[in-house]
Amino acid sequence: MLKKFLLFALVVLPVTAFAQEKIAYLNYADVVTAMPEFKQMQDSLSKSENDLRAELQIVSEEFAKKYSDYIAQRDSLNESIKLRREQELDDMRQRAENFQQFAAQKQEEMQQRMSIPIREKLQKAINDVGRDNNFLYIVNSEAFLYISPNAADATPIVKRKLGIQ
Image (tube, rainbow, N blue to C red):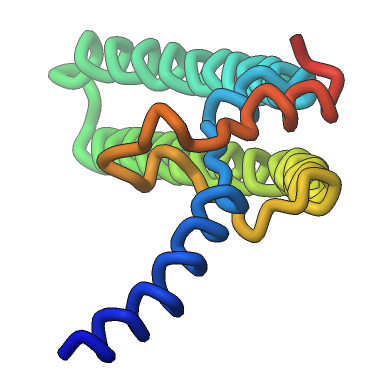
């Protein structure tokens, strides 16, 4: 039993002590949101969303006008004209729904496309910091329930590497 304990102490304890010195954590979200590229992406997405909302507003106003005109004239229209106008209104409603879906998909694709260079730049900085500081791992602090106050925080080092204050 004593041999097993000594073997454990000789093998595991130095590895554990070594690993603690070589593992750092990073607040990934904090770094990403501090990057100027992220702000630019947010601004571009916001502008695109505003443009799409304006277009949707125009479509909605056009639909509301046609619908109110139809309601005002509905009783005086013959059946074939009434059916044609109802079909037009239904088509307009369908186009508006399709546009909403298109707009949401466009925004999502734009966000994904614009976030790629941000993630790549951050990953390069993390890799450089890890290599320069001889870290075995840099882990995302958001994935852990507890981080020792003695653990190495790579967040400020990565921010400096990226030129972020």
